[in-house]
Length: 258
Image (cartoon, rainbow, N blue to C red; front, side, top):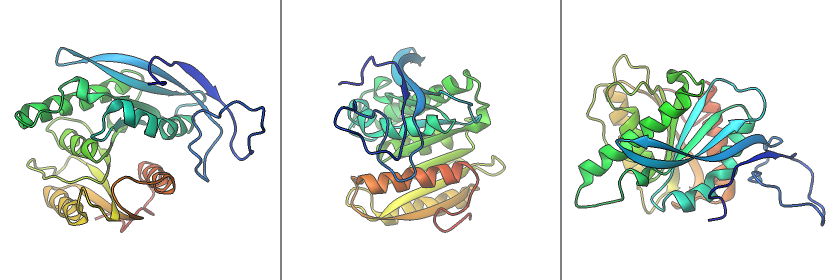
């Protein structure tokens, strides 16, 4: 893929139509609220349970805001989703967030014959990615997990794990269940879902919301004005605007806190 091995400082502006001689504007997803691009991207590797895991690390070019985001890809994998999410990750970094997008399949390939072992490996890879941000100056309690589809399941598993230290999670098109008590842990979760979703039924996401509330988490839900599982660009712009609002402590996303 074209992104593999790329490490560059990205600069640019938003709001000006490119001229015929302008180079492609890398890192600008085309959202109405884009900011000028000021961030770097590099391919790194870290170890999780003895296995090397690739990841893209996004670093603010200006002042960091002290927050971090672990972005967990969907079932199509790191190569496809790193292209899908790259511009949005750069936009987050341009706003001051430190962002990491790990290839958690590196920790264990999808294997339906060993679901529990695979889930543990993915969960640990997500937490080890969070540790990478903590090692780069982001306080442990300020690292949020963000996941889409299968990545939402990994984010749920990791954020609710005993001793994870995760206090914020944004899960789009996700489902699952919670076995741990979350009382007293201060975990806040934003769940996003389409009007209808052929892959992850809306009722499954809403059931997860109730499960999380009963376990002791603070939960917000939001319906996206889209039908389907593979979101279009305006919907992704909406997802990341809601993500920023949630992480910045605003309550405009969905139905508000539980």
